[in-house]
View 1 (cartoon, one colour):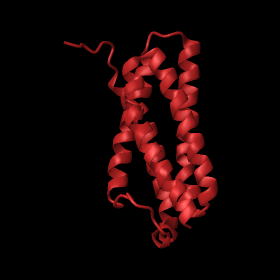
View 2 (cartoon, one colour):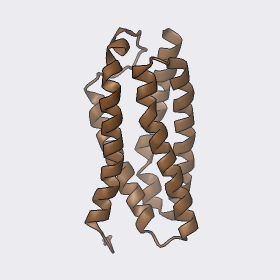
View 3 (cartoon, helix red, strand yellow):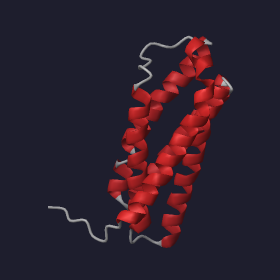
Length: 160
């Protein structure tokens, strides 16, 4: 049986609130550009629109939990700072992707941007895993979803 030690609900809530809040704000800002997206040619395997907020909510929660695990770990402060810095940078890149994609319909730039996000996620997973294996594993669904989102983004770029 696994016991959780030093569990701090307030710090976990803040960590999850940061990722969920940035995701919600980005979604709110980018909703004004979704009309253009509706007119775009979509690739095969394009999921229904209702699925995205569900998946992203789960992923942002997992990100917040994962970041909390890194923050509370007993790892060297320098390692934690490096891991959480990459986490913060990828959160910002994630924040701007929907704005670039939906509001500006800048599909080529958004394709390059999401590849940058993918690289940052891979680096973050490695750094997290080295500190706390669970924190690294919690990021795997995010990686898988962004690989899928990369396919969709590049396909939309090509088709439009």
